[in-house]
Image (spheres, rainbow over the protein chains, first blue to last red):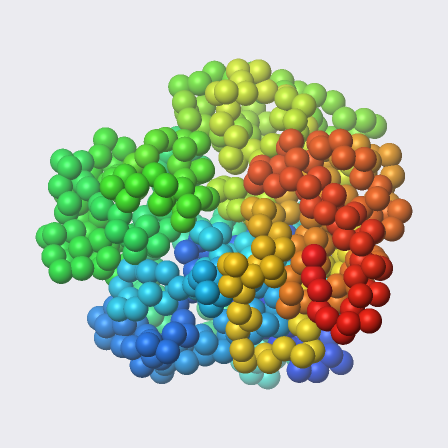
Length: 342
Length: 250
């Protein structure tokens, strides 16, 4: 069996937005430190950051506030959130968006007067989603990848993490064993630090919106190495996705902004069922409620023939949908018609 | 259900002398994509067939192949309209890793020659978001074409790349234009010098293959033509800038 040994300073498993940001910041902090990226797919093309359609919530407008964003976040989470983490998220967001624009080179959409455009997302009391059309992730990942190129940070592509290596004297991670998928060769990496940026494991479910690399590898490796995993029941499902019978397109995302813009959800009987679950906010309720409502409808036999529900944007007007959700419209036209099945 | 006759190119470089075609009958759903047909092959008669994909929804640009002679993003191409006979080959102008998977390294190496990363202008405040009103010349000069997903279809279809592998190709030039007309970027002159030489924009003979096959509806040809125009007028602009001290962008 052929194998290879590599020594580096910082080993980063995963090349979505988190992995690439970690690599760039490590490199910029101290270019002497060797950073090695490992991707299960291709650099810049794998993972879910790339698949973000809608955009990111951030308080930028003078009439909005970090406090309001925080409140929306914990209310949306029914106060189950780890509030310190939620606080970090909303407080860092304005800084990170500026970094993405001014250092990485992302160019988010602008309003006619030239400021960053922020659109409506469900569960938010203020329109605070920055975006690039309805294909925000492509812009972010391409620009991050270009910066990785500029820094000459090496990346092992098509290489899967198998096991974290721990020191014999205690629970300290000192590297990892990897598998080169294209050659079947094992690679042992020794490193001072290992960053896991491998995402979660949505592929364990029959339908998921995610990229096909996300199979829980990182969490499982960490668990086997002795890490404690917490809040494992908190799996986020994006509430709306496209169902195409007998196709791998199962679950392909229909973005949040559709409900933000006023899309309606109907069950198999043609009822706007959100009235039963959140009569006040209806379809603009938070993701968890909309997901659970759809699940309940389908499980109780009120789904469509495909075992799905319907999302309807026809009343928003063809022109509005075409202008604001071009990517989504193209995908739906390919497979179905105006109203796509969930 | 849809019955398809699928011919796929099989080739393992270290083992086979040359590529060969293998033909199988498969059944897929009525609205199956070409990628679904490949999954059907893998689940049935050709379990060791190698191909590449990730997102399934036309965003990652991993699954482009040559379908019935034309570059296509297989996840976003329905099998029915191009079937029932499908011939699937790997992208051209790139070395085959195995079967339908190509090594995109030369494609990205070419891209890396064009200074593809953003470098902020030194006079900009990193805490301010750049104002770009829609009626400003700066906004109008931006490359407003759809976003590129670097799938490699244009590079595969470009006969100039075939004739001269040192030519950086349509995707790299299209993206070079995008950055060159971005008013926030500080390395415009350097980039223009890098992409308007013999291996850059002026190698393009405007055949338009890239425009015809781009799954995102981009016309790299148009971007390259604009780069050529900028390159021709840039020395003039430089002179005007030196004389009048103005910032002047295409």
